[in-house]
Length: 334
Image 1: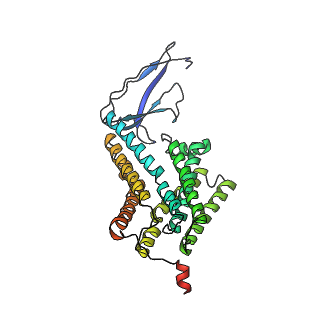
Image 2: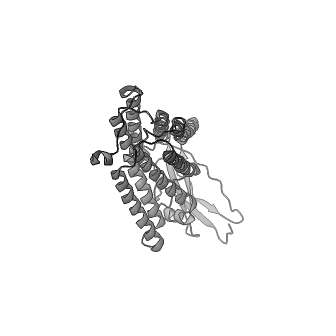
Image 3: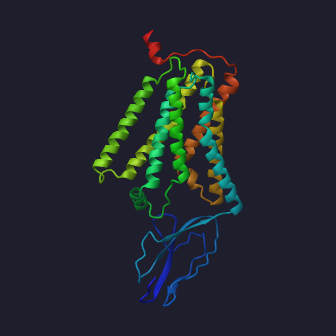
């Protein structure tokens, strides 16, 4: 910093876009500081009062300080608990990452995909594709990140490298399963008419949105387009398990549907929710759960379906027998 005059700095506080002189009780107020030649650095000591998140900005009459110049302070109840939270994060990341392989291995051993519902598979790959587009776009595009920071000046990009890797890996795993469906025994199974209609509507919506965004960027920002992809992913997460649940019910069997996939998904979902609650407790930030119920609700919904599959496999249809179920189109033609 090249100083031509003394520079007085005062600090502002908040947890959103609006910063004030009120520390909100998280820390002791920071004293004003003055830079005088030749001193160009100052040490600041921060004393925490309670757990939480706090944005600390600054203002000065002598120099221009923008909204992009700020500190983000995170005050935890326990540093040990933070380590445990990170371990939990790796557990559910690994559980979700390997959850695709029990089904792939089962298909390979049986040389058959009978029992795996094609509607679920079709919806699943579309959902993970949308998830990957959102993650890759927001993580790798400086232009999109500028749009995000324009909306959230003090925000943090909500996508990490492991999110990108997981999404792309999920698409690859789904493609492998689809290739198995092309070459292994599949009986009369096919993607239902209803699912084809749903996928066509969602695909058309994304295609039109993408064309509009690329041709008229000022009317539909790229960030908004990526949010459209994320909304499709959320919708698919809500409905993708229903076809497999109903398919198992009609067959009175879970033969061909890997319970290992479900147990790993249940493990990942349970540890993900546990991490959310532990983070909320450690940083006294319960609004991260109940203030944004979408992620929490989807986690609960996913676990709910996992429990249904577990009940079907271990209690309702324990015998390794099944009824051959024809597709809806074949039923109607008879």
